[in-house]
Amino acid sequence: MWLSVSIATDAAHAEALSDALLALGALSVGVEDADAGTERETPQFGEPGSSPAPLWAHSRVVALFEKGADIPLIAAAAAGEAGLAVTPPYDITEVAEQDWVRLTQSQFEPIRINQRLWIVPSWHAAPDPRAINLELDPGLAFGTGSHPTTRLCLEWLCAHVRTGASVLDYGCGSGILAIAAARLGAASVTGVDIDDNALLAAAGNAERNGVTLQLVHSAQPLDMQFDIVVANILTNPLCVLAPLLAARSRRGGLIALSGILASQVSQVSEAYKPFCDLAVHAEREGWALLEGVRQ
Image (cartoon, rainbow, N blue to C red):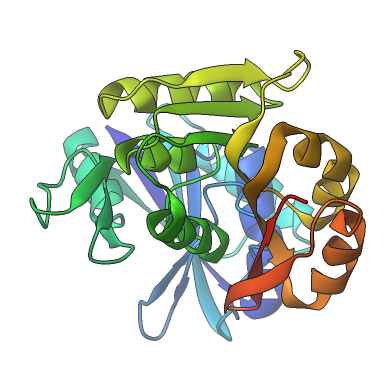
């Protein structure tokens, strides 16, 4: 059993109250419209550029705790941390574990990238057996297919991966881009990340999808060259990594970069100018994907 705690508050304190509850041991926290019941879930994954949605004037913060949690003490402490003079009213509801799992899973539906490719959580059947269905569950590593930068990269890979190609996914996170490249026909795919947990997640996801990846920590030397280099990171590290990523791309090879705000396109293009001319391939929700050919 779990304890679901619903605390009435206002827009001015909802975000601070959510943060305080997480710091005090909440397993998850969401904010609802107290008048309409429409939920805005607190971001679960470290996707770049996530920004909070507008809060409602009359809000309700809903937090999940283990059954033995001291809710009166936690509620009072969270209220104090959020700058509330008194503890706001709250309700406590017991939630069965199977109900919580079902509720959590219901928030993640299959994602259609295009006619060729779907991202499908393990608890869903493949929506289109004729397409490539990548089985991928939400987890600790970035890359679930829902963020615009990930979708931009997946769409680009669908259009550019050729049978037998070699692919480098730098900053591979969950391995979603590397796995997609392998399923799209790449002969060899290497994923690099700075986070050991991401590499473990990528290895598990690759096994689940029946593909083989070479996974390398960014601290290890990498001396191969690739037909395709893709990196979905952020602008500053992409600029710093320009010489390294260019060196890993063979002459005439393709480079695709995302995690770039539309306003930062010129900054990234300038960093790669000694190696290739980058152009905007596509934009979505303020994010851009740049592509170029290694000179």
